[in-house]
Length: 307
Image (cartoon, rainbow, N blue to C red; front, side, top):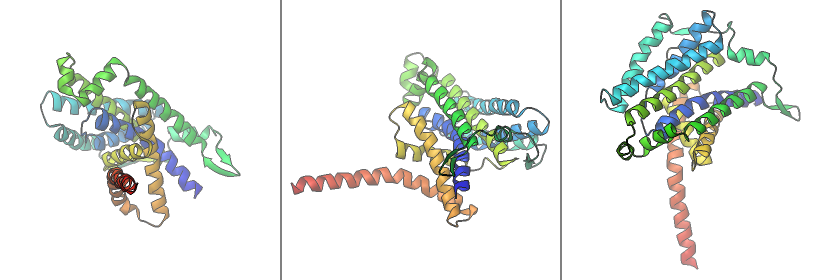
């Protein structure tokens, strides 16, 4: 059981990078970006191909980040300069990335990394101490290192969103008309936001490919839903009143989501059921606050009338 939980924790922390990227577009920029499905697979494809070709896994992950940023820029240019609807722009980029990813992978649908040195194998070789209580490993050393990495990324995002450019980005999502009246270039902030988001998503794809030992051309399918599920679940469970708290909620939501999936598999559900479980998790997370609020109001009203 602890092995499954630790595996879910490690995956949840890596998918938190995806969730943070989705948070930047979905909540901060208020942009429905479907590029995510393509840029996630792009990150995995770039990292896997470069590692197989003998490059450092750190360099491969960095190039994956750049590739993801370029994908976001393409979507941004389509919607700002090409005046294409944002949802359609993301779909067009995602479709185009499928062929590009196949090109990167030289026409192969899957690139195995089982015998290659990756960031994951390097971290395992460090033998970083596990957090064990009573002889039971609660958090593996690799998970602790993943947590440190994700926290650093979270703090960088928090800092960025409080800079002048970050404030422009937030204002663009809140009220683009108002911020344009103050002379801000909303086209630039939209492109920058999409580039940062997809850069994070591509890094998540590169890290997941190294973690699972292969990159697949279809590994990005449904990633936008997973990212949204993590964001929504995190906000429901942990709140999102401030940027600092919201990014913590996103990370926590990603971990909780992977734990729920792990427990569902442990309970006997099939991997083919996971898409349905994801949909149900999102529905529950969206409906629960409204239902709870209504029940609370009725209870409070009944108690007041009883007095």
